[in-house]
Length: 177
Image (cartoon, rainbow, N blue to C red; front, side, top):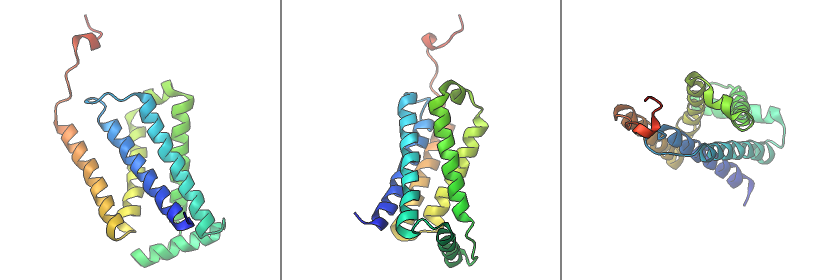
């Protein structure tokens, strides 16, 4: 397999893992999924995303960050008419956030489970913003269609689950007498 295929497929797999992870998180009240399974999917997505960054730096930019910045600026100019290379830093930030989140979940699972929902919303919102731009704004053809379909699945699932009553807790699940 050559460099461009490795780079392309690692991001596709990472985004599919992100999609799967988000669907597993949304389905929790209706479908019991172990923390170990959700953490494994989240971690796998992160690791493949890091492999994508490494592949891109190796096969396209020869480990030269200035070349990566220039290529990002050119892609942004071609798509949006603005020669802005700062998107490379947004990708780096996504990697830092994802790795930090994975490490938190592995090293302090109790603390991770008790974090406020705002953290989850910020992280997921940021990742979805990046994914949307990467798939829908900056891609064409089948990848754009796949991105739209993936976002359609997320939105449809969220709307369906948001407007459907959550399953009632059984007497055995409640702590009230």
